[in-house]
Image (tube, rainbow, N blue to C red; front, side, top):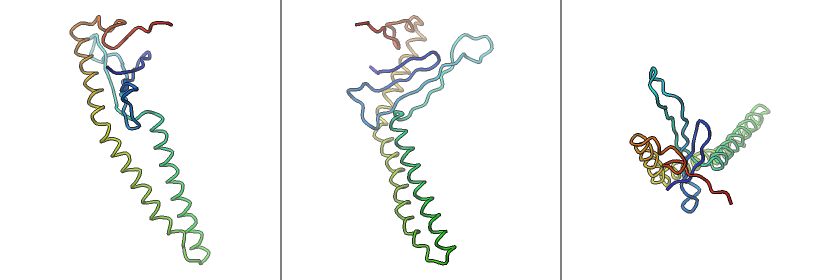
Length: 151
């Protein structure tokens, strides 16, 4: 069983909250009408990725590292132009280390989340196969949609 949200032309699938980790993926799928001349159906376009909060943190860390690198290079250039030794270049090895750390964290998270990616993919494929067999599974209480009971 997976968790998810449904909008008019897209849906997102998540691993249930009791099994979610920082590296847990989500599957975002856009649904559009099929392009096959007059054939009824839909075209799905999906992608796996981290939760938006994790992605935002990763981008912010990359931006901070890029800014630090730019400041170090700019300061070293200013030192060089003024005839001083560009001692600010000593910051570049730590900047390189930060880039390597960011890349390694991304690869590690991807490896740790691989099993859950396959679970999400399998859930989607089983659901699509069920819809092909019986289109009524798209109704509430079907494969993908569950009616929410109001409290």
